[in-house]
Image (cartoon, rainbow, N blue to C red):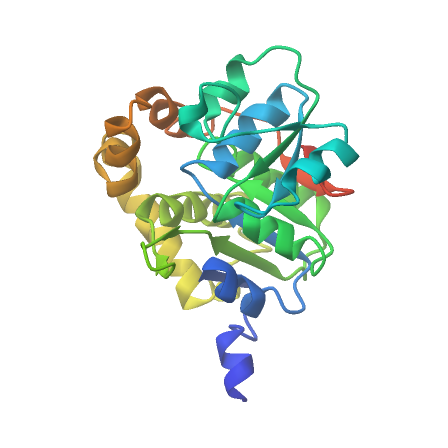
Length: 254
């Protein structure tokens, strides 16, 4: 087996990796990519899709974002401290009259924007819609489907990947749900060791998930910035029934 095949986690059908480089690796030949960015892109997408709002992923701090939004007749989200629509789940929940939103982020959104050209299907998963998405996979995809789960993570000041524990939990929630709901199809043997580890991390965290999310580095950072509501929204395990699937460049309800 070549090194490339090893890093792609072949021959396992259910794979797990981190960040954009990991996404490019494990999505090779995948039928579905699942991008997890709990704080906060995927949670924002979940909240928006529940409202019937389309979300266009886009690269962070790209000078073409404004033109991209105009082209799609969409509202461009700004920075959190701008006081309006932003990468804040509560702003997606509370802003009236939304139909289409361009929502750049340095992690989840940028990864989705990149993968949209590479994989046949793409979904955004968070703690809120993990179980619903697992059920949708079992109802929609063939039994031999290859699924690549990507934890977006965060970035250190130098731009390097900072693995974010909340994304491990979100990925694990989806993976654990996949196994629990479809034991005859997605048996533990179908999952790579990396995917099994993510599911185990979620199982360990689930009993105290809201408290752990508030106490982890990213949760404390957002609370310190004045966004405790965003952390509480993100902690709503299985609160959403809407599955967020990318079609024609935008996330909408499956």
